[in-house]
Image 1: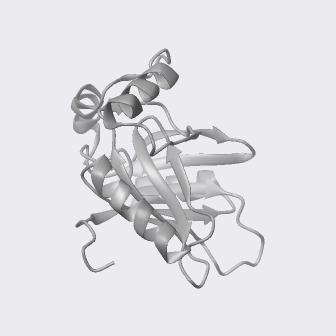
Image 2: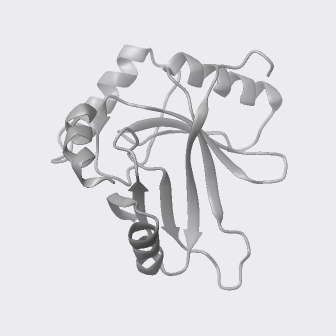
Image 3: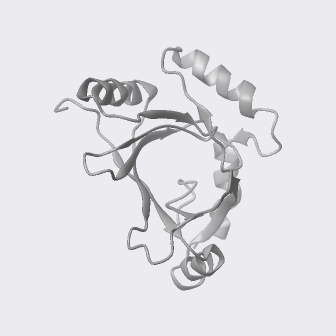
Length: 177
């Protein structure tokens, strides 16, 4: 994968046992703002950021087993286009990586997968919209860019939180230190 698209560090997701305590610590002590949160199946999630340009820089996720030293749910890398995501998807498939999971979150299009030692990774790009999180739908890379946009709008557009991401960023910016 020497000709893969450039990416930037996106966010880190941490498995926790006491999400309220952890969200309080990251907010009160480290200055993060809780930007979103909710349930995804049995898991409670909180999203935190110190930058209005990022929906979240940290995601806290319940379900960490007692006495577990592994706290990382996943590490995410941000790309700039659906074409870039497709390059990574094709490269992962060509490498024979098991469990490649293309996902539509409404506010991001993602590919989840595991490295050779089982660490969970994500390559993603932001969509043009803010959608209350967590959300999770399958993403079909056989669709064109326009079809992916339309499918996302059809699936998430009726939600009360659906709006252009620029509006959300302008609203959240004054609340983030």
